Length: 337
Image (cartoon, rainbow, N blue to C red; front, side, top):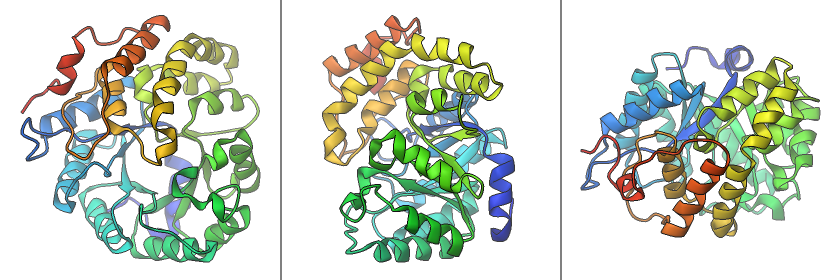
């Protein structure tokens, strides 16, 4: 259960949601029949070592609800208050997402990131509001809204979720604690949400390429969730420096990792228009930085030799040391079961 009541959720978020949050993709046994507890616990410990303050526990990788409960329980137990366990509300239907949120809350999740199902095709923003409120009303977790082109809501409003609708959600749903702003993939989508709502809820963006320079002009206290563990400890360190007003030092690191950032964008461009994140790519990127790695269940996108070489070379050109093991070791993982 969360450490706050529903009517305290925003105050809790303001006090507690700080620093950067990455993403943890679950690890599996070699035969893919069960989860790999040792691999999951390894990733939590390593995320903490890298300086992350929260981790999205990724659910859209062919998990049962019971398995997801195990995933959250092991992650929250290993974190022991050192890292927020972020529930990923990304299951198949509203009903399944409500059940998953109940399981995640009981297992120790701290707050939720709200996604929308692939089969959800709202006719209007009123339908988006109805889904969002139904989910939030049914959970005791604080909820981070996610404004992003992935949901295909840009056909309803160019910003993906209109400012007027976000205003209504904040006003009528008390456990909305944050907005993850990537509207239209534009800097304007971040700044418009920040300008309108940062005094009431946490406004964040997971895009380190945007948030670090913007921190010279705006007071972001949190950034997440994304595959930023690819850069090792660099993103939490940049965020820490920028938060302390050391913007020149933060931007030195920012420019240092530009080759890796470009490699990430180059490989990600292959799937950008599919509406589906390549979680195998993300898991490989984490493995290059010391995370567990290991096989993923079907269906999954793949990461091929060209992509792996590009991502590895980007880290090397950025002065970061990727894992020296051959890429074949990624598909086994650091804690094979």
